[in-house]
Length: 185
Image (cartoon, rainbow, N blue to C red; front, side, top):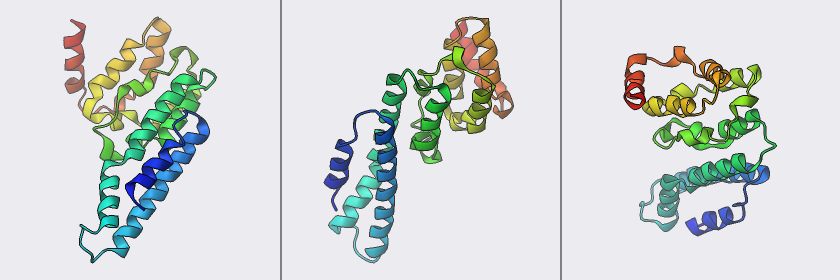
């Protein structure tokens, strides 16, 4: 199978809906298994062998990860009836950028744009803290905190954000707070 096959398969699932997210996630898993199989079969073969070369190239690009990230963002933003927990579920369960540490440079705080702070309850707060976004956003923690500060519209939102941000998980708080102070001045 060439890379064209995998790209062609993705073209059928560009519509942002729950089923397409799940299908694309399973396609990515299938491709990863295919990639491992190709490496095993052609282990002693030259990397220039077409099937192996294409599998390695597509694996390194990981278009599935990019596609899933975009699809989940569109789905979360286009479905007003989705609860905040359901939106987080799609991020946590299907978005490789927030599941796999090798994508730490791909995480983007705009993933939280669709969350409604007025619809957050204790179950959501516990679920959110369980994901440990402070660890996921460790390389751009200031942006992560700033994203939530931007969402503050009233005192109740401030209280909610204080409950969401897992301050204990922030290793050296002074490093993260200095960039925020500069932006607030």
